[in-house]
Length: 484
Image (cartoon, rainbow, N blue to C red):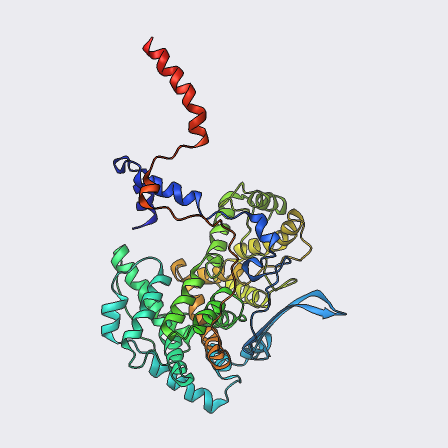
């Protein structure tokens, strides 16, 4: 049953209020006094009072840095991101001499070092062999029960792959590695085919399924499979490849990767773990943020007449912050980060490629608007909320704009993120299996009240409250008056 159907059900007078009473009971329950979180020093969201994540684990997969430690104090610094100890800026800079880098990044995250030429060739051969989806799987799974939320379709397909695995529950490192590489290879096909299924069965558009080609990068194959004619420019494929590299991994504490650690610690299978992480990434507070940014800019463009006028743009941003415009949340999406302070290195890199793509597409006016909002929003947020910490743009700020310029539909924005993050999840799952021997189990303090159990007869008996006692004399007076 959809949310709209539930709401309609709640308003249906023929139900005599039964469901309405359930909704009322729900609203009256589950409310916890916010002051109790302060009283018990609860690290809400596993963060301290300054918003920094509490230490819950160790990792060698990646390092996310937004401060420099000087004389025992954290001093805001330009953001840095390292994959297996290698600065992501160096990885991207090395691609000037080569076309694509995502496959090398996958190898680096999974095996701890960059591959040499022979290792990379063998790895690409393995990945291509693992990439195939059987016609039966596409017909019976991907093409069935299509819907516009491709993330849910990906979860369903990933869970169904369990049934196609001869050894699904084996969590030995060797078997988990095989499963992880298969999912890294297959997820792009699952996402794109699920989108085509949705277009065909829900929007009555032409269905076409194109197989990936050996020798092409993952970025090239995504564009090949997605577009009707399978055509793309070298810059388009390059920019998508860079976006995949930048989204491949981001520490163990982000919500979807922490989900990987939590679920893996229970000893469950790879497919369940990945499906849970996809579910986490789907959330608008996590992977869905780039779509929020895109929708916000559509709103700004529709309501600001002069995109170059700093005062007019700034005035509308104030309206957004004051909950008077856009979605009335008071948020300027794509701004701020839990770790980064002065800059998000992923955003800095992606912005550079977004500009190059905007020049090729003739969209420099839109790019200039993004730059203007970025230059204004951080200061405005800091001033309005009286923050000590700097507020910088994060990678979501430009990623939606990049995807839209690449002709990637909004339904695939977050699935592209999932495709990119799959190697990061896999590396962390293997790290958790290798090093941890306890299930992750934090504490929750009970702050409710203990009450006596009542039998059904006692619960069903009419209760007389203090209000009933107060109202009874008035009720008697009215009845006497009516008799007279």
